[in-house]
Image 1 (cartoon, one colour):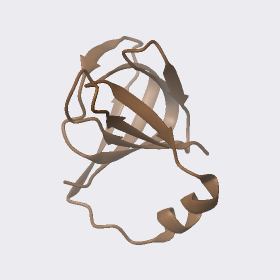
Image 2 (cartoon, rainbow, N blue to C red):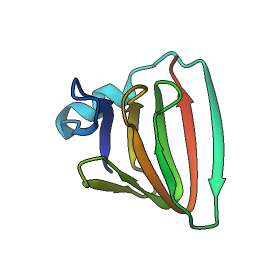
Image 3 (cartoon, rainbow, N blue to C red):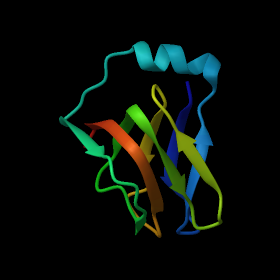
Image 4 (cartoon, helix red, strand yellow):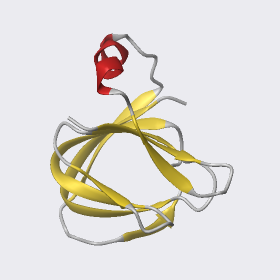
Length: 109
């Protein structure tokens, strides 16, 4: 299971930070407050151009995959069971290339 944070740096660019796997289990097992959730699907392959997360939220891949691209050319692919905390609500944002992607958004704000 991949567990990462996607955040906006002081340089205006989005960056990934991998959560320490030794600390991930206690973090995931604590109850967290959430404001809402949404299940979305994207079955047709396409590229979503640079955009920011609309709000701070967990993104949990349920099926398929998504490649998240950053302004520096780096990317991460998320598959079923992978989680990222989307916090890049400002700056350039990120791209998304979904492939049969079904995901759960858990909105925190």
